[in-house]
Amino acid sequence: MAQRILSGVQPTGNLHLGNYLGAIQNWVEIQQDYDSYFCVVDLHAITVPHDPKVLAENTRAIAALYLACGISLEHSTIFVQSHVTAHSELAWLLNCITPLNWLERMIQFKEKAQKQGENVSVGLLDYPVLMAADILLYDADKVPVGEDQKQHLELARDIVIRINDKFGSEDKPVLKMPEPMIRKSGARVMSLADGTKKMSKSDPSELSRINLLDPPDVLKKKIKKCKTDPVRGLEFGNPERPECNNLLSLYALLSSQTKEAVATECAEMGWGQFKPLFTDTVVSALEPIQTKYNELTADQAYLDQVLRDGQTKAAEVADTTLKRVKDALGFLPAL
Ligand code: AMP
Ligand code: TRP
Image 1 (cartoon, rainbow, N blue to C red):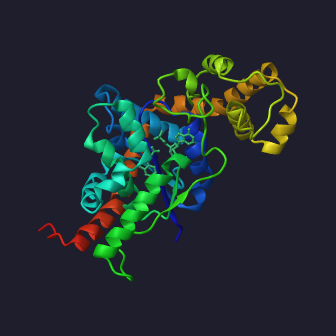
Image 2 (image 1 turned 180 degrees about the horizontal axis):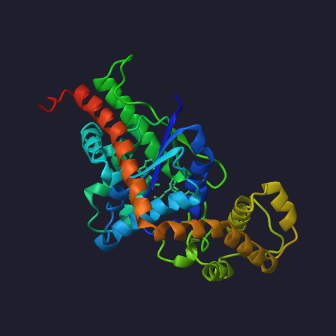
Image 3 (image 1 turned 180 degrees about the vertical axis):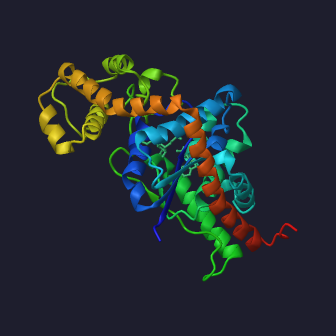
């Protein structure tokens, strides 16, 4: 039996190059080697204040982008997290065995809570437990994510140790231990406005990120305005030049060249020469994704069917695991 992978992206706004290079492109490359599950994590999207008018639309858009980026239904199941009710239910069960102080020290919680100020929801604190439920319901062997999710994966692993210790036995564990799968290149794509900050959906400035659906004129404008430095000659790995390292890394990844080839090509270049070259590379890398996305959004019935099939398949696996957990915790089975 093939090992299983599971991952997800929140339907909060548009996907950017960080999501693509840090996560989805990796999913596309490895999907045929695994039994692959990819969900749109809409329950996570309401852990910060959200607009109910756009949640459904954003959820569809992310599902369509999965397909447009090359997730194939031959190898993968695509579904919406809230369509499989076992996610919320397992999250509750796991809540009751997760110590509060494990959650209070999560970096992403601290960052988001600080950004939001007042009125942080319990859901935001509980976010990593819901994420653990997503992963553990599918007995996932591996979880392909960007570097920023490593701490959440460790928490999921700690939860597995705890539940198995309390309610399972050596030969009959309650839940399976997942492994993070973080690839080196692209694991951390930085902001166009500040090479020391990660590219993020929540940055208020649109100029800080490249979205997968940005049309060519917008890409051109963003790249023209992106932060650089006054040094001539471009290089990787100089800590004084974080923007230079980020842009060259993106160029290498999107043009499918090695770092060495790019380092040689750009060693003598100034920004005036690099930026148009980089713009062309980004535009041609995104064009096939955008074309496919437009085709998919024109056929709503097809996407509906994909998500319906995904729900059926995902729920079958998830419900079986949930039952196993409820039995281990000693619940009276439904009569
Ligand atoms: P999110 O946008 O927070 O739902 O993240 C979805 C996926 O994209 C996760 O696997 C993240 O690790 C990955 N990701 C988000 N931002 C970046 C970034 N700037 N660089 C690399 N990966 C990222
Ligand atoms: N927390 C992840 C992120 O922001 C999204 C996510 C939710 C996820 N559930 C998951 C990723 C399960 C992998 C597996 O990127």
